[in-house]
Length: 161
Image (cartoon, rainbow, N blue to C red; front, side):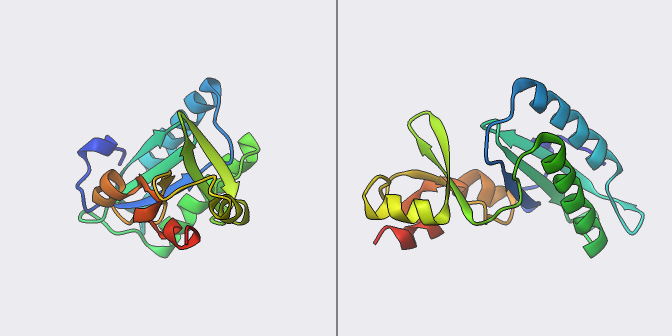
């Protein structure tokens, strides 16, 4: 059951997938349509899942699920991962690699390997105030307050010392 992301409760669980590049306007239109279709039919053991999505900066896909109605099952989570993998193949993009970091450089979103980010921190190319994307947030409330934060306020802080 597809609902508007902003109408989901703050406690809704989120999964964030960051792309290794920006999507084109045409790709975003297609991806939006595919997300609409996937979430509209997404179920857990035959029961509807009340879910929505958000796309930010032309590269982050966030899927949110209101677990008050029905919780995700192993099978439904597998289905969502399979869907994301299909997007990876269709658009020749990496969405599942958790060993990469996205952060802001001025108006732009940079995407680096963890090793490169660590080197940048050592060289002071990124600072404690560099805005990073903490894709480990668990729910919409955290997504709104703790997803886009200074590196000093995120797990990225360990690389800044």
